[in-house]
Image 1 (cartoon, rainbow, N blue to C red):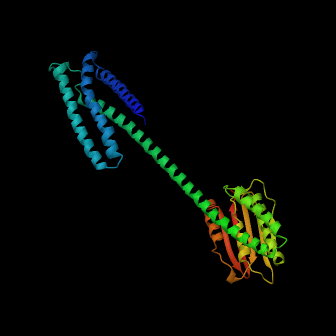
Image 2: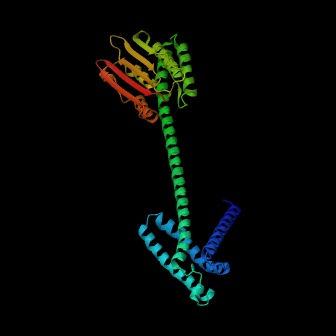
Image 3: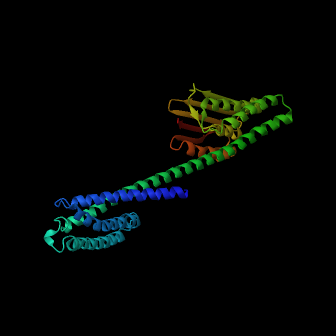
Length: 350
């Protein structure tokens, strides 16, 4: 903060304090002169009482409350508050004695009835102290609440950034895993100089376009994700040729339904990578069914126990991504039965 702004702020606070204590002085003068029309005497008495009131108030709001009450050092707060009351009470007695000597010339009957009443004088002083202390407590409470809210906001922002970084890290793992499998397939076709190689390159181009421009978004249209899955399946069909039997079923998908990108593909990749040919054929069945509130993904494939793993990079990543993106809003069930590996995933639409 510039030095000029600090000076202006201090001047503003000083003026505010001067205005407030001027109002307190007027209150004392009016209050103590209620039964005496000679306001010059009550003004003099009030002026003598002001330093006591100001000192007691400032000790309360700048020392007792912030250093002991707010920090929950209640014993010290009570002890020092008692000291403050004793000292201020003694000074109030002196002010009344001053009124008797200086203003009333030692004539007790000439004293203002209110100024010789120690209870009323003490009440007036402590009333100001209590009111100002109450405002100080409210201000500190508001300040602490604001700090807590800002801290909570920063924590949430930090957690969100960490969540985004973790998601990006998981996606970075998925992409190489997917590309590694696809490039291996293309390499095999290139060695055989197969006629299907150009078509594979076109399909791969579509997949890479999806990876580069769609996957970085937090959510994509489910229809786009399904088209991406279809391109991948077509790519695998070229590789497996007549040894693959695959069935993909999708009900009518609304154009508004969105999903986290690359969420289903690791399961489909694993069905090709770890699936086994039974009677010379790899059988894969996939269905994607949507309602207004849920997306149900199901896949099964033939397998052999020695060739399947439920702890691959893809499946571990998908479990972490589900926990991050759909925590408490998904149900994942993976099971093996006879020669079939099954995955059931149900998501609540967000």
